[in-house]
Length: 441
Image (tube, rainbow, N blue to C red; front, top):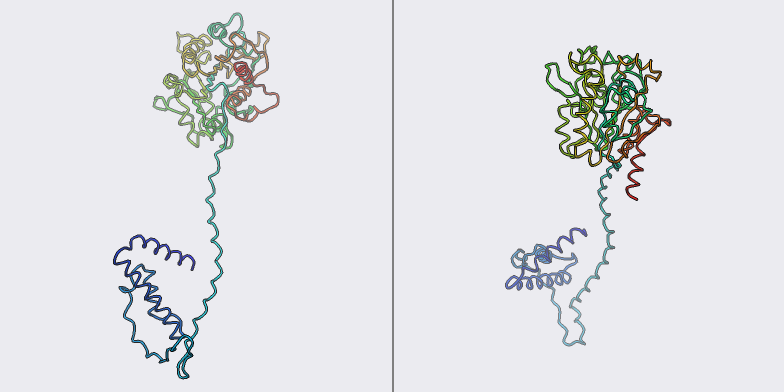
């Protein structure tokens, strides 16, 4: 009822501003007619407001003059005669009917309670706070085949660029060791923290036996969720037609037997995780190495994390290069010089980059020489280079592929995965925090 009355009142108020001249006179007349009708109805009958009054009131609510909207009143019933008083003090004659008293005004109804407020639309849930990278925002991780620690970093190094020129620009991790001599074992640990298995130690000859379920996450999954970018640049990765292609891997039930020097999935750990295969991340970001120079041209095009895997020849495996060309550590050193010069000259590296030169496997041809040296076959060393590090430094702490994952996670504000979370797993990320604090001081 209140809502209806309010609507009518609003209509009247809105119409008032447009009523002038003749319409205003008609409105006055309508008001008089309505008032007279109300009085007459009260005086002449017990039935309350009559049709004339009702029509007049309705005309008012419809914003039309009563003279134009109501029908002609029906013939009035003969009025009962009465003798008007001769004077204010006179009383009515005996046969005259006394006027009935006006009905008392009905009590105003109690005000209705205000309508309940409409429920507010709940605000959308706030987006989760994303991790933030520290001072290092671009990591380049290179994985080679080790010829042994002495052959790589010793006084009689077979890799002069690595042990000389590049060594002077970075920090040598003298006690970095592999988990196993085979590539898959160390690759899986580096990007997912997964422990060695019999299949990975054997080199994953049966692709399906090394596949991880979709629930097993990788560093690439973490980076994508946190809205960081990643890329794997794999040399020699081609499809069955011999054309460069993304995320190349064997069929689930196939046994891989690549030709000497040809691409092998064992150097590309990202193709073993359903979390990347099933959701398309591998197909989008696991690319041939020819893409690297284009991505290095501008910092905004450079991925936050880049994984570089050269061909078996350029990784340093003996017997994998064309006849008559450099082989083993010499081939790896030549490739390393060309590739790292491109990285070190890139805007992303110069601004906030970190280059990690690691070994993801031991060259089987070097196993005998390593054993003769008396050093453990898994101690291979690694090198860090960054504008944020003091060059030509040395770090003798014990590191493993789990350390590479933990350090990278911490640099990007992420939680360590798998065995990288272990209490005994060391991280070198704190070196960059200390550098940032010192620079701030």
